[in-house]
Picture 1 (cartoon, rainbow, N blue to C red):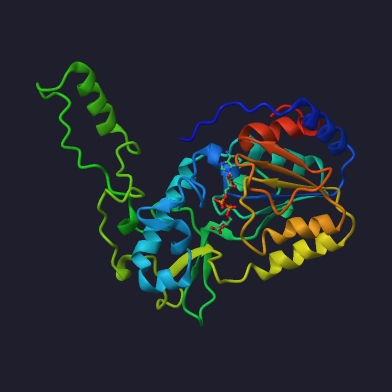
Picture 2: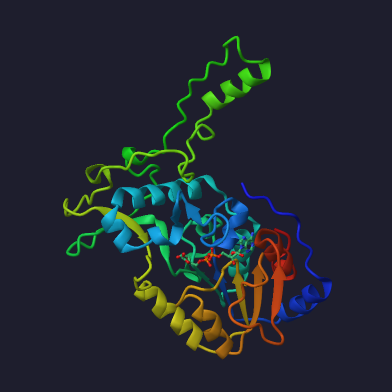
Amino acid sequence: MASFGKSIVPEADLKSFTEYLVGCKRIVALLGAGISAASGLPTFRGAGGLWRAHDATSLATQEAFDESPGLVWQFYSYRRHMALQADPNKAHHALAELARRNADFITLSQNVDGLSQRANHPAKQLHLLHGTLFTVKCTNFYCNYSEENYTDPIVPALEIPKKSSGLNPSATDKTGEEASKALAEALSGTTNEVDISDVSNPIFIVDKKDLPQCPECKDGLLRPGVVWFGEALPERTLKVVDKWIAAGPIDLCLVIGTSARIWPAAGYVHEARSQGARVAVCNMDPKDTPGELHYGDWFFQGDAGVIIPEILKSVIGEI
Ligand code: APR
């Protein structure tokens, strides 16, 4: 689990932001992996961006799936497992509360981890630009099958292996402390799992026939319902978002925990600006801004899990 120090939002920035926020009507937020970092989930770029020896983004392609469906499914099955273990943090809850209080606030999320949904973010105000880990769909071109699926593991072959225990808590060569630790580990379901994101732990590549199969056409493999590199964003979502943006002036664009490098998602910040929005960025890294900041923008450096509830407090109360 990642841990972050408590951030101090500079008082002057907090004051000017809060004064502006109370008068805001139309607000849009763009979320990236950084908002879920405080929930213990890794981001894509920078530390944590590697899964085994693979750049996480290199596994998110149709080509990678065609070449090694077993490996790509292991990667996604691991991410589903981690996401289900994680809990939404205060930033997810704060945004959900803002949405409940302001029907003119929409959130565009690049995240596929389901944490905003689990924070009860009103569904109509949450637009998933990159899909979700918890829908799966058929890869057969002629089959439109898709389903919501939270089963973990989705098929038995994708179960994360347990450390071969070899633990004998009562063995005489252990001190009392070691024996209790061994017993606790042996009894614990999760801490005893092999960390398959670490390349030094060998894994078996799962055979195609043991991967999730389409129950409808009985011909295609199922794949995760996320948007891979080179794929179009969900058409219906784009239409709704574009309509909302075009509907009138926008007061504020919150850019939270994203490196803002992936298009078209990052482009929404510029579209919001062109509708008059002032931009407030929250990121650990001061270099990660969506283009140059303008006069009147804000940059809140630090953990979104701490900063977002703090800067929204005047409108949503204590989270
Ligand atoms: N609080 C705020 N920001 C954080 C935190 C935190 N606790 N931890 C990390 N960050 C910031 C990083 O500094 C970085 O700018 O979150 C950002 C994460 O960036 P990326 O890993 O690039 O993730 P994201 O912007 O969501 O990537 C966009 O790229 O790989 C694709 O489809 C994938 O949706 C993803 C898209």
